[in-house]
Image (cartoon, rainbow, N blue to C red; front, side, top):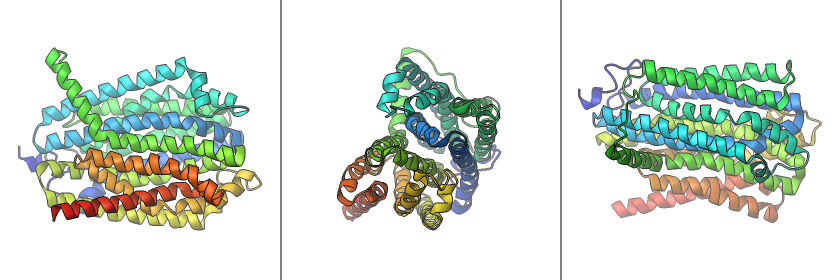
Length: 459
């Protein structure tokens, strides 16, 4: 079998990463990916609407305090999933399907072990973890209720996150889209039923997420057992040599996917830091207002991440095959799409901020006034966020793991935390909303400087 036909002849979606037209290839992955993510976004927004209208601002604030745990789980899933996607794509470009299958199996095994370990840790030490997340006073019992019922979702989320990467690389982005759609519909329906008719409060919101996660995990397992074409599960040898190779492969997968983990972890840091800073400067109403931003942020990030991850298997495969022109073409096209998305969302958030905020809270609440004022300021960073996310995805796809991790840490942790601390003291409460945009701008400047350095070095 020739290198350029390995993902074409026997794959249901007829995806050939090495020969198909770049724009059409990108579209065949992007539109199913973004459609599936749109349903996930719909669930996130709907969850916020149901919680905000059914349980009030305390419900929103309580879920926002627990959200960093889910972000941590997603971060680890992103690390494993994006890492195995890069490594397996390169193996497939070299016609080494067996190695790709072994890496896939090892990735799932690692994900299960990590999820079980984290869930056990969270159940053993609930009170210290809740207080570390900032739950105190009247928010503590609400946060505890959601926390205890929400933790089972960790295991299901880990398997689902890894599965999305593997299934798209296997050439079935439409099935990955179907998983997201089914999970979102189940979550939305059960959210309404559990919160309103059943009156189960935050426990109901958590149970809806658990059930949706179970269904998604079952669909992933079904695909891997019954439908996978190239990346079927493979029996890994447990001999001393096999264990040594497994540790080596897992280390390489984690290294290649580390930027994905840092990116998701940065969202958790953003939420935790923002909660603490907003609580300090603006009290509980400020936290409730910031929680609306935290509901909206995944909408933007998931769309930009969809652009980056739609380009990733194409870039990684052609990078492994040595087709540099196709690598450059794919990156430039993904960057153009990402910047266009960033501009459109930025303008929508600026001109329709009050309408967007009114979806979550009533206009007579203090959180409405605070969020309506801050959302346009916050949206100014979306253009730079698009550039940064696409560039980090490109670095990850061509095995420049160190650069991807550095720029992800700059935009999502180092610059962001520094701006959250410095800007409010320098320019007042507007600095709370401008901290994240300024962090994105500073990261873009660093990327430009890095590219100029590489250009001069090559010249």
